[in-house]
Length: 188
Image (cartoon, rainbow, N blue to C red; front, side, top):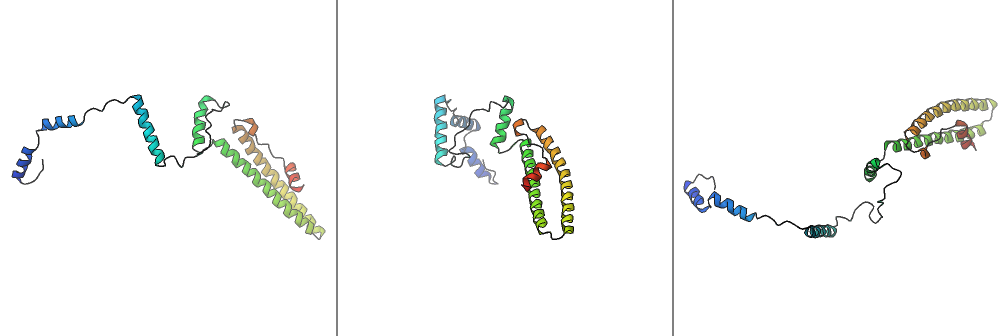
């Protein structure tokens, strides 16, 4: 029924509408209960929806498309950790110790690169030294570098030890640095 200001029109609409009880019965008749689906009906519906999604291209850009799935669980991972690991892996995440290990290896590589650069510069400066005083200055500078590197190696080794204690597997252990070995590596 409309809410107009015309009583005559409201009266005509009232008499043309079915009584509320009859309207409810008609609504209920329209909403006849749907028959229960059998498992075969559900399977058919699911297959129909999958085929429709395939035609619409819903599966065209899936990650790892065309690669075999690795459904076998890792036998070396405890069952309670398998789900956590699969969640991390599926979301391109990694446990903290893996990221820390990568950062530690990067710090070691930066230290080695610094050694290589300074050693190469020092070798060139030593070759170009023309006076004994310049050679003595270079030797003193080298000893200062070696002293600072010793302190840096001590700090790196502390971090390496901490990292090795975090890692759950021993075969990924990072070996502590020895300055003498590192210097042989860059000079030889």
